[in-house]
Amino acid sequence: MAANPYPTAAVLRSASPLPLLAADVGGTHVRVGLVHADTDPARPLSILSYRKFACADHASLDDIIETYVAGLDGQRIEEGAIACAGYPLADGSIITVNLPWPVSPRAIRERLGFRALQLVNDFEAVAHAAAEIDASEVLHLSGPASAPSGPTLVAGPGTGFGAAVWIPAPGRPVVLATEAGHAALMPGNELELALLAELLREHDHVPVEHALSGPGLLRLHAALCRLHGRPSDYREPGGITAAALSGDDPDARATLDAFCGLLGSTIGNLALLYGIRGGIYLAGGILPQIRDFLPRSSFVERYLGKGAMRPALERIPVKLVEHGRLGVIGAARWYLGRRQGSQAMRGES
Image (cartoon, rainbow, N blue to C red; front, side, top):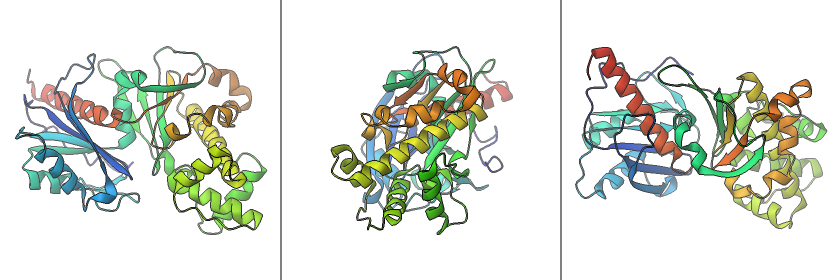
């Protein structure tokens, strides 16, 4: 991550009794919620209002937020947080390759008259929703039902690939945002080596999200078809998953299995790199669409296939969760934690 672009304690003023605006900005959808401003981390946050917007239907994030606020029947909002993937800059905006428009909290704040609107990494936000995350479980994939408290990984593919680590600590947990999606993709068998070689024809660095994302699924299928001397006719990743699940297209099925295998290997690597003990939660927009395929794929075997470390990985619960409102809840939880911390620094109650 870049040097911290987020506000100092002087920016986050005293607590407002008003609810917070929280948004989770993905490459395909933006989810926006109005959240009750409860600073007690032991209590689940209440979402008072929630809407989902398609990015392609709007000219900017400013327009989406303004549309959402206009539908709140005059409810006043002074502050909030935006969860979004990307590379943060010192002015509070971000560089992102997966959105059709720039993201600038300052521009939204000035347009709508907010007192404070801050930015947080999207998977960092989901990790801050750790207290609520088990309730969103969709599918148990590996390991025991639960584990002792310890470093917990939240990761997964959507329009890009995101990952964050939740670390228990005295007082308030720490969340480590990562750029795991930009780490190099690591193949694990001959087919994946051949696919990587195809991808390297176009780029001298093939990051994880170049394969493990919606656009990555299209790239994998195109590479596989080139290996077989056949055309790739899909324009949307949903077409590949639909054909793979129906059994109509062997290349689509092989692509989806390669995708799941690479995902399993990547998640296993991240678990070992970050010393994960408390659990692994797979989020993002793609995996719920293939929830029936994932456990029958090579995902679990590739996740566990780390030689002498297999027994350690077998002890970690791995669960697929519905990303949905978690990004909104996590963004609000992150903001409330920062606001509470800034108050403590100033000696406020």
